[in-house]
Amino acid sequence: MNFQYFARTATTATQGKLFETPHSAEQIRDTLLRTVSNEYMFNRYPDWPNLGHIAVDSRTTYGQLWDGVPPKANYMAILFEEYDGVGAQFVMDLISRNHILGARRALSNSPLVQMLNIRNFPTVALFRRDHQQALYMQRYNNQTVKDLDDTITSDMEQGGRRAPILTTTYAPTTTTTQTPLIDCHSYPERCRDMYYVSETDMLKAMRMALLDEVTRVPGSIRGDNFTNLHEFMTLLSNHFPVLSFQNDVRRMRAKRTTSVILRNSERARLVFTHMREFLEGRKSIGSVTADEYRRQFESVERVYASPFPVNSTWQHCKGSSPQYRGYTCGLWTTFHALTVHTYIDTIKDDFVNPMKPLSTIQGWVKSFFGCEHCRNHFMHMTTTLFPLNERRVRHPHDMMTYLWRAHNIVNNRLHGDTTEDPQFTKMQFPAPFLCPTCHSGGQFSRRQIRNFLLRYYGSIKPHNRLADQRLAF
Ligand SMILES: Cc1cc2nc3c(=O)[nH]c(=O)nc-3n(C[C@H](O)[C@H](O)[C@H](O)COP(=O)(O)OP(=O)(O)OC[C@H]3O[C@@H](n4cnc5c(N)ncnc54)[C@H](O)[C@@H]3O)c2cc1C
View 1 (cartoon, helix red, strand yellow):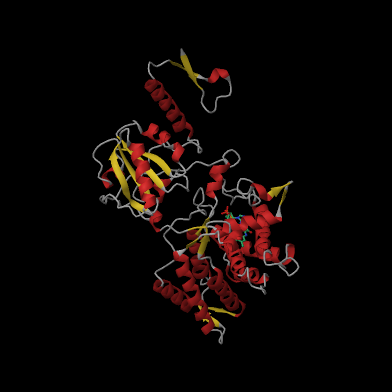
View 2 (spheres, protein in one colour; view 1 turned 180 degrees about the vertical axis):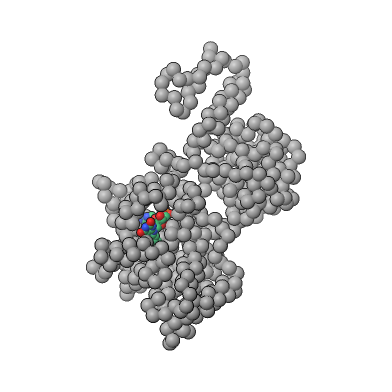
């Protein structure tokens, strides 16, 4: 008896690779593992588990070790092996747990081995996403998977307070990884995971918007620019999101929503409040010099323990190559989050002016957005093409949907442009993989869009300080 292996790309019966029957189940398994691993190494299918060995260099961050681990998985096990040994089997054995536990493999010459002080192989180390020290480290054996399950269960029961295994520090030296593009039509779930609102992105963008952009032109900030800056700072100090809602915001009244405090954003709000008061102190003269404003901002952010993560990498807004995305993605994200959180914060108020957050955002763009053609297009759109006025923005929820439509007009114009990231093409948002119910009969359903925006911008991934730290086990 023989068996035939059909690679993923095989389209005809003759493309199967014939194997002579090995003598035992173990041999069949090993042959298959070797063949599957070879196919992976050639093709790096993004929807297959990551069977490649981790590569590390002196700039590698803890967050990068998690490449290929699904964002929802809070734990990762790394198997260290001396040669191409049990690693592939280990990674595949853990696939069924990948909603909790991701698996990776590393070679014995990896700098991680010295950092973790590993002397015997194969060894498995377990990490939690918010913790750079191993929770478990043992020689690999047939109990390992059970041990991992037990360690994770007990760690979760203790609310993530399990004592780490002490390890040593060492500066690593070799090279890194390049993530392949994912086809969102074929792998909608992988793409859904790449779309989320990140606290890090918003904080990074706001510091650039309020500091670099506002002080780009030397001299004084006065007249409309002064008023627009004050209004924008007021909007941020009142409605910059400081809570992330884990469940549906619409159920808030039924008290079924749980929320998480965004610690950095709480401190950022104090900076915004302080800066608003600073600008109010200058209202009588109606101007402030760019230098004075900069000094004040820098000193206030120090007082509040620097809540803006300047050294962190972009998260959702990270481009597939460095020339894509980044700041403007962070800006859009914050603008949308501001409209959604203003809506949430004022849901019980009788008199809300839904135009206010939008005209405030428009004011900042007009006065300070450094991308000149973006600014001109945006002003043309919001005054002529799709004017921002009371007729369009009548109800409180219109503040969210006006900006949603405006952004889609921009997406449509830029679709196919050279600035388009091939991984994040400028589709009409949200694509069906993000919100299937938003699409009905080739059109967007307004009600579903509102609910989607509340869910998407209501639930914010907190800044994780640790992900950006260089490796130091
Ligand atoms: C006000 C403004 C005007 C701009 N004008 C221009 C211009 O004229 N020319 C130019 O080349 N670039 C312009 N840009 C930059 C451009 O829009 C993108 O920001 C940039 O190309 C990066 O795109 P991205 O793939 O990161 O997604 P972005 O378009 O930046 O979107 C960021 C994120 O917002 C979410 N999102 C996308 N669409 C919507 C929507 N409709 N509603 C709610 N959320 C959504 C998604 O999560 C997306 O990843 C402008 C940016 C801004 C902020």
